[in-house]
Length: 301
Image (tube, rainbow, N blue to C red; front, side):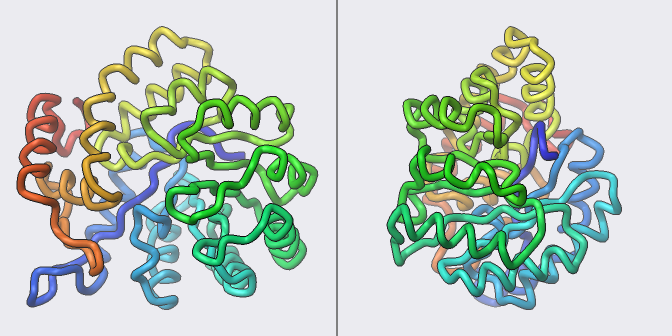
């Protein structure tokens, strides 16, 4: 159902009196949606990690989804972040996304409370039993404190609601094992931009990308070429994007991507506490990469 380049969309804020992230900048959010439609992004993924969902109220969370769905207007698919460390809250958020009109949900593994592998299975089984909706499991151990193992994900592959998994463990051995165990019963998406090309080469169906906020056309080309069997062309795009991927990892996501988007003139880069502005030295490094790659509002390095 979902394939190609999918953007883990930032949430633009106005600056408050202290220069931090304040109210939602709804006009900027709508402009970003239109930008991605023009540049070839296949799916927009709001209110995930990159969208600072952890600092949004429930009302803001639903408002962002509603704006993205309205502005997309069926031109691209919308996969809303709806995960939580509470199964009941994940159910409520996923139901809300469905009612608003999203096309699917990205559901992160429960964070902080560190469930066992059996607990993960029961969490996702309970969610699927309560909400009939296309969902993508999101495994990102560095954020959550729990690694959902390939054999655990494979246990859920027969549940029709789970159409894919966003794999962001950073462990290619684990990714290889995941492909082997799933046997094409569930789509695999890259959740780590530097690993998008190798995951696509293994048979991945796309990427949920941070870098695509800045260079949607290039990420779309990388995915489209790989999915059509042109690995040489996809490898070329991958190699050209490596410096950007590296620079966007200088600090905790989404600090670098929002800073880069401010430098490139897309949005005000305001973030909500506890995220703070990028270290000046790292900002210089990031700015140098953007300048070298000639990255600007046209989305083409």
